[in-house]
Each structure stands twice: as C-alpha cells, then as structure tokens.
Length: 114
Image (cartoon, rainbow, N blue to C red; front, side, top):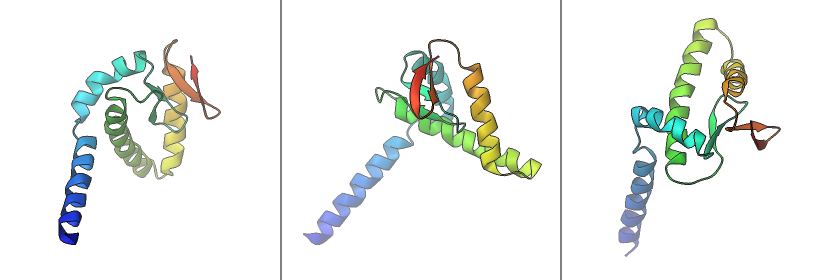
C-alpha cells in the first residue's frame, strides 16, 4: 500500500509539473497581449510578469514568458559582465514605461492600472 501511495504521489507530481510546462513560448507570446488587456497579467519592476488575476491561462503565460526573459537577461548580463539583477531592474523599468494605459503594472508592491 505504501508503494502504491508513493507511485500515486509521483504520478500526481508529474501531472502538475507537466501542466505547468504545457504552454510553449510561441503560444505564450500569442496570448500575452490578450491576457494583459484582460487585466490578468502585469509588468513588475523586477523585469518579469506576474499574475494579477489567476484566471484562464494567465499563470502558464507568465511562466513561459518569464522563463524566456530570465534566459535573455542572463545572456545580456554575461555579455556585459554585470549582475543579472541590474539587467532585470532596467528591463522592468522599460517594460513599465512601455505598458499602455489601461494595463496593470506593479508599483510599491501593489497592482495599479496605468
């Protein structure tokens, strides 16, 4: 019985992790504008997206886009021999500046509609 429970836990863990990675970057890019306009996702000062309202595929879009951003920030930091946090901060500032009116950005730890 114990072995069966371990297998069940492993299967459940795999199922949960597989669903998180189910969305590819291409699909996430296609959905990004829509989830931003719906107010489900917003830009943060750290250079990454975060979920404003956990509906639909907001979480999956955020995770796929943030993974790609993280990789890109790392490449930029290595190329210029600077800390990744510096790249993230500059990217976050630019992303917030470019966010159109009516979409969410994080300011002082709170979500604000720009």
